[in-house]
Image (cartoon, rainbow, N blue to C red; front, side, top):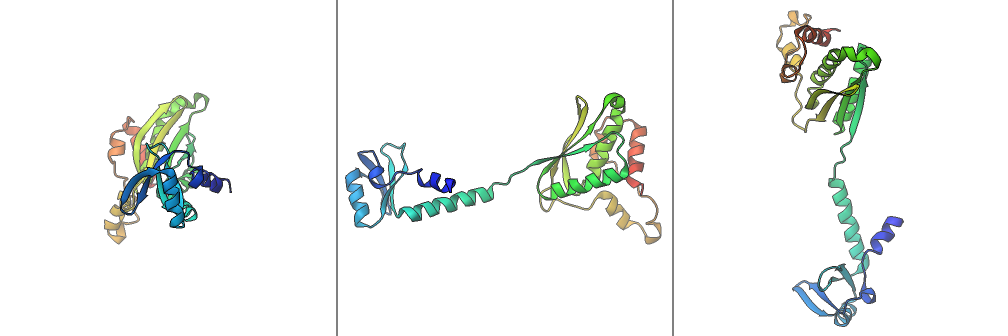
Length: 226
């Protein structure tokens, strides 16, 4: 009710128009005339004189039924609002030694967020002396990015800020999603060899990471364990 009243009171109409002259928009163009003449013209056409641009010199008015004008404005606002996509940033929190069950649970939530068009900020929180395991946290976040490759692109590699290490992911646009590289490899493997463990490809995300070869091997094995 309040919003409707705000829209209704946003415009001056008819005798509420204060300027002595106005620019009236008609089908043939626009004409500057005394306000009393524009009001007379509105009465003869059985419409309202609506001030749509009060700060112009002189103010700009339209000859239109005010109820119809408000309906058009409300419809236009709805169309603008519908086109505006609200992107939220959803947070996923890990510990440096998150187990597989918790990891998979949080990955499912991340997939839901990304499918809904939201960004994901995943982070590892280091409590107390656990900051000594920051490389382990980086491995965890890189694994997370790799496992979500089908749904997300990496905005920034893991970075340590205080006691938290952050990874930023944004959803892929429709049409960008593709099967994970590991799944593509498995489909190309002969049926009798599908039971063998496939190695996670080391993509650009891993290549740019500052982690030791030992930790990288841990990451690769973590992604293939059942």
